Amino acid sequence: MASLELREIRKSYGNVTVLDGVSLTMEAREFIAFLGPSGSGKSTLLRIIAGLETPDSGEVVLDGRRIDTLPPGQRDVAMVFQHYALYPHMSVRENMAFGLRNTGVSETEISARIDQAATALEIGDQLDKKPGQMSGGQRQRVAIGRAIVKNPALFLLDEPLSNLDAALRTRTRVELAQLRKRVDAAVIMVTHDQAEAMTLADKIVVMNDRRIQQIGSPMEVYGRPANAFVARFVGSPPMNLVPASLVVGQNALARVKLSDGAELATQVPRKGLPGAAALQIGMRPENVAVVAAGNGTTDAEVQLVERLGERTLVYALLDDGAEITAQDEGNSPVRIGDRIGLLIDGAAVHLFGPDGAAHHPERDA
Ligand code: ADP
Image (cartoon, rainbow, N blue to C red; front, side, top):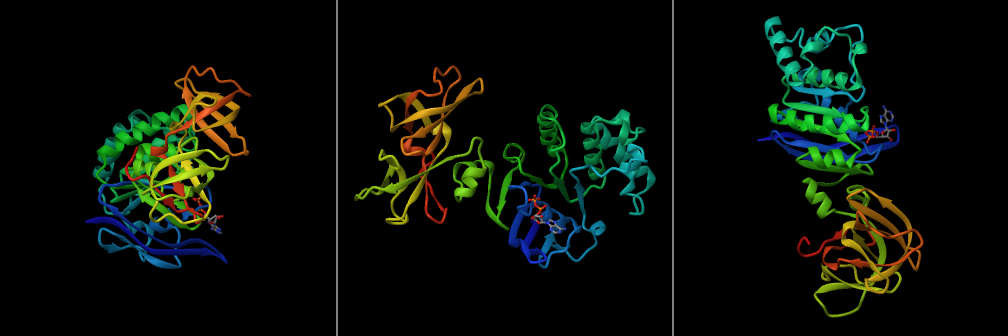
């Protein structure tokens, strides 16, 4: 049975439409990430599910029961807020117990649940502290613990890692993934960080411009992005998009000409591509290798070299001014100002039509 269903959710603030007909089905125990830029309506959608915001129209159904008409406390969901929202005058134990009081759960049961969650989160020895005496990472665990003790059918996490510093964020991300295996519930996490979404979620819902752009597994949205927006938003550095035109011919697979005149054979079926219209060719940096000038698909001038240790990112300009990011080995000899060749793996490139819709290679390279 589907654990959560969103049906045609619409929401406007004044005359600004924030969600324009969002529909989604989530399987039981799935971990979904709402991923999108700031302002794309992710938090609004989460708050609608939690009952903190009312949609203008549409339905929210959890385990077969319509919940959008119920108050937040009766929805069987628990939310972890970005800023934790802990009560500063209460101890950790009281904070965790608060949401369970007046719900018919006995004090013995409340205590047992708190101890169990605190142990799992490794804050068992912190229960008598006040939130003000704890670090950001510990407060974040209390906020998660407070959600866990409610035993909800659905966890809602709003940017749970964004207040942590880089090192702690990576560690907490791993812990969240481990914790996730232990809780028997579905999870929705809002994030603008594609690495967080890629590493934690079973399924990513990419949002932009009031709508869902794509729903898929992390590797689906990375490997077969539905449109130019998803292609640029998922992956770091983003996919290169360079103007290209179709070379006239009879082949079943498209041959394209880059803006500087260089030609490239792709594995994208010609059928279904817009005819004479201007296209964009999309290629991940890892599919563009640095070679000697004259030996690649085209030549370019190096603008910037970013050494990341295990690999080097080379930002280069084609002769017509188009920018391409290529990937070289960690010990790349390339320097700013060098003239280099770029060898594009034609089997791995995608084409995008004037409407931004993606056309993928027949097989994944
Ligand atoms: P995200 O979580 O993707 O950053 P939000 O859901 O927070 O996006 O916001 C989406 C849009 O709705 C933004 O343009 C924001 O300014 C607007 N918005 C959110 N909440 C309100 C509100 N209570 N009143 C008016 N506008 C709001």
